[in-house]
Image (tube, rainbow, N blue to C red; front, side, top):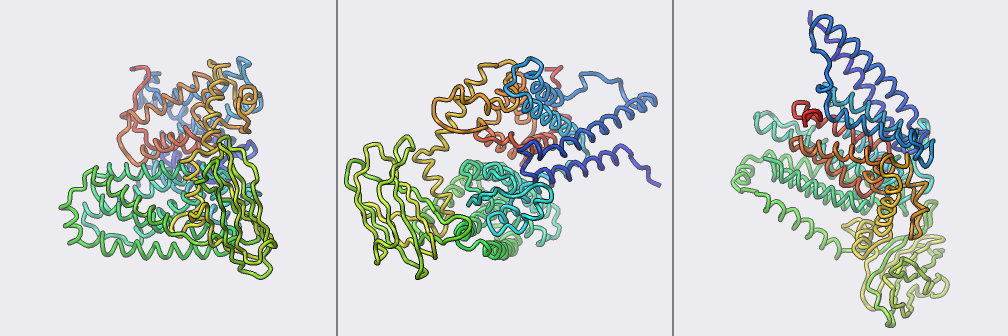
Length: 608
């Protein structure tokens, strides 16, 4: 009879429970609010105590049986010490009375203690694949509930059972139960990279071992990858989309084989995702219930496309042999990827359609930004409208916006003012006018904005092959947006707050309570939108250096892998957003490190 390893069985039981808790926490608004993390941190504390007690008893039993060496501080891994220091650093503002708010300081301390316990459990796990698939599941769950959030919200009653759900205000950006699109996007991006890695690993193994290719398995992985890519586009997160594309290209460059197959997968996935996302975003404000049908249709189309790729490209030996003769070096891959993307975007920017607006319970207003205003000259606006219903009632409000993002109404068109539904207006913008903000409002029925001209030039309002909201958000970034300006201000003011208490920090949520004392521009924000700087502000130089060393050790002392790429992508985005304000993002941070970490390669602080 085989001997049961009690230690491994105990660890497996803990791992299963922890993964279940993580998945529940990912649905509960990501753990942004105190009420949403109580169950998780209490459970982790109990599991951590049980975990520690079990191995302390085991250690003394093994010592008694002379099966293990005497404990030494030199055997403690550097990551354990750094995670412990990070947690302790959040206690220092409380001990030295430098906190801005005692309640939030205690809250943050407890969060980082739970992350410390979680890291120890994961890094010592012998079931790291379990956490790997949990990482994938976190993003996919947000992708699927996010689609429902854009549609009819069928899952809302069930989410309420665990005190979760969607934002009360409907948004046209996929945010799932995280309720913040950018954070949902980075979690989905991690899933996407890891799914692609599973695809690549599977194809590579099949080719090396000459085993039969499991078409169904590949189709499922390909489809999930396409869903991840589609969901990221639907979030409208510009930064995540750019970082995600760059990470995919880097993964492709580092992949030793299957470069052509992976390139085909990426191209197919992006074309399907762009087309599907555009149709879904149109339906959000016109017919939300049809989003499920469109989503399902595109899944079926992606399965057909992917099945064809597997049959006619991946399994085509003659084609594979020809491709293998072509050496796809890094330069060629970069040129192919960038050229394909640019060509598709250029074609997409030239193919547009009427903007449809309907009255619904969500939102009857669509805003578009129009550039190309001629300052200090007479400008002319021409708008053509088609009424889809005889009782349609609408308004069009035109604002001019200056360099300081201040806007002023310059004209307004009403449905009853013109029976032809063609409107014209001339105006002379101010010297510092940057763009026009146009609000299309439908009070009754349904209308199409068939054409919008500024000074005789047609300005597209809706694209056919590209997600329109994302295109306009990228245009705003190019010309300068309030989002970019405000983030710069947050960081500048965050630094001012940090230097008021650089050693011990201001405690949890220090930025939220102190930014009004140092701000020079008018804005409202509870987060600095830079997770690393926020740790410096809240926990001082000890916590800040600890997190920087953790990041440095992971990047420096671990070999290339999809997990490492995900970690770098994750940190880059954390430098521009509030990821760590969500408990689930701290959990993913510790999971990535715990899975990546190779004990044989981990350096000891005491030896450095």
